[in-house]
Length: 113
Image (cartoon, rainbow, N blue to C red; front, side, top):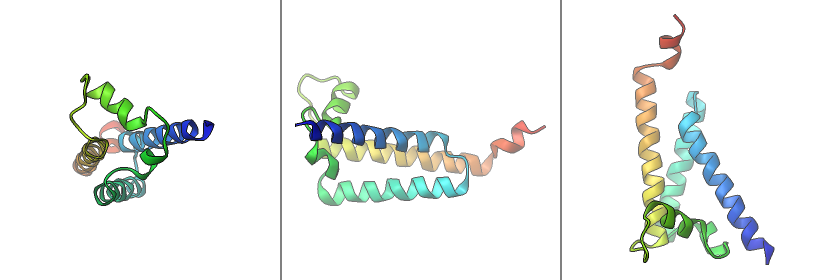
């Protein structure tokens, strides 16, 4: 009975680590690693009809909690797979914009003077 809750906690930890990687990655190697992870997740969610970890989680799933927090609807209109795909797509877009911004305006050059 405890295994589904442990999987939910592990899924939440991995999600938080990925979001922290998107927000705080600094080197090109970190950018490439996070971007490749996001793209693998995005295509995996698209091809499998949702995240594979959601199937093994207990109730409520991390996707259900995310929909309740972000959408704030009594009856959610999105499926878990659609919500997960939108979330990972937004993270990928944010990461690409962050990479482009850091390529144009390197933070080290602005703050070293």
